[in-house]
Length: 299
Ligand code: NAP
Image (cartoon, rainbow, N blue to C red; front, side, top):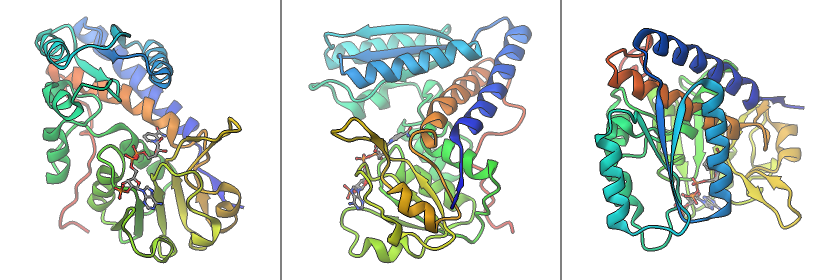
């Protein structure tokens, strides 16, 4: 049976580091890192996500300020709000909960967030920095996956890594991070001709397809490390990943469970990003540079 890559354990470690960092920042500068939480519309899952994020922020000492618009708001109103938050020195990070209600343009809204306050790492400038291998704010889920792999000592250099899914928030940035660590990366998507042929080659298989249990055990290479990003609620109410855990765990060397794998890392990394952007704005950069650890040309 595969080793369980426990995201709750790694998230606790990250959160403890963030809590210590927030405390040091407060005592050094007298400033509390502050996250503006923007929620437009009343999509029920978004309310749960926001509640989790605010609870975690409180636990590590980050202040949050709510900008909640359950009735939605127009695109010009949203852009104006983001402009005010960008200009407010008391706000260090801006969390714009997605999806936005109909009528709002997500790309335009994300691009309207000041890159230095973009705690989700979705701003085109921050994604561009990631592509260029420059220090940046990383998207939380891919950054959290890298923390898990590092925590469990998974060797990335030269490894065959396959990423299923090419979304802007998970698949694409994850592929870049793996590439930056010298994995040989293949990306799969809905037009991939023979998905199983690719996944069976993977020493590291990361799945972010949003399709319940689309990866079955026979598609997993013997001894692979499997990272399941998917979070799918079945009609029965059960939460499952994109990987069929029982069969995949028989072939994998290590695997993230759902729940309790990647999920807890996403919120932990959001807290880490909030501390990181607050430090930058206050002129007290992180003791260690944030990933990506781009080692171009080095062994
Ligand atoms: P998304 O935007 O819907 O993207 C899904 C990607 O998977 C697309 O690139 C799509 O290909 C590809 N895909 C879909 N079905 C496929 C199939 N049968 N074979 C191969 N590729 C397939 O999803 P996302 O936002 O990246 O999220 C993916 C999953 O991760 C979801 O279950 C989501 O809930 C979960 N998630 C979890 C966390 C967490 O914290 N644990 C965070 C974010 C997301 P095309 O591009 O060709 O359409």
